[in-house]
Image (cartoon, rainbow, N blue to C red):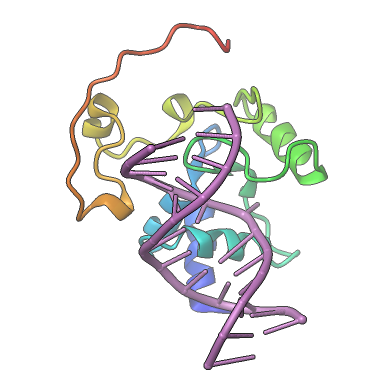
Length: 134
DNA sequence: AACCTGACGTTGG
DNA sequence: CCCAACGCCAGGT
């Protein structure tokens, strides 16, 4: 087993119950910034005998990566709900269950993500949304 | 080697 | 919301 994969598995295992993390975050926590795809690949090839909270990994926007309705999709939804994470319209609320490492992101939105570190960004404050999608 | 394909992420239209 | 285009990179054909 590749050592990179092991670090990714360790990062996944470190996500607390009731919380979620996106692929990019897992990669970064594994010391592999900008390697979100690798995180996905590693998860896809998780040894069957290894127990990981793989269901806590979703895309950056909170959406479940599997095709909606697929077996994996349903299983992931079930596991998330089993630990109190609401799944609506194939997605979870990152603002509520994601791991917030710093407050800047909470206040200023997604400023300072991975591929944009060397790119200029215009700061923008966005107002919270009304309970439309419920 | 060339090309394709993803459990990905962002920007821009 | 959808889509295209990048950037990224390991594996498969």
